[in-house]
Image (cartoon, rainbow, N blue to C red; front, side, top):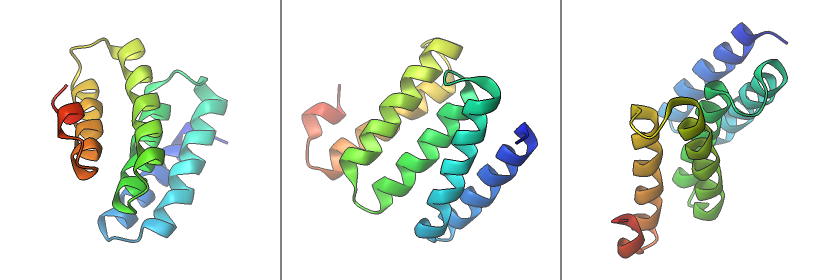
Length: 111
């Protein structure tokens, strides 16, 4: 395993997701996450990025609770790595709000 391989998986997964090929994208996001954990540990921005990608796939599939769990994991990592003011943290909050809105939980989306 090598960090470059993880980045390649991430790129392929992102392209597949953009094409709506969620079933093909998900295992690549998982491989990216797993390699990143092996190479960097569980609290690294590459792990957060892979979690966010997986969350996006689950959101598109309507698996909102799975998406929220991954978004929350990505958010926690990003806060620890980057601090509250980083754009990746804002994106993670936005992703969570979008899930809550999709579930009709607008009060949670506004928090």
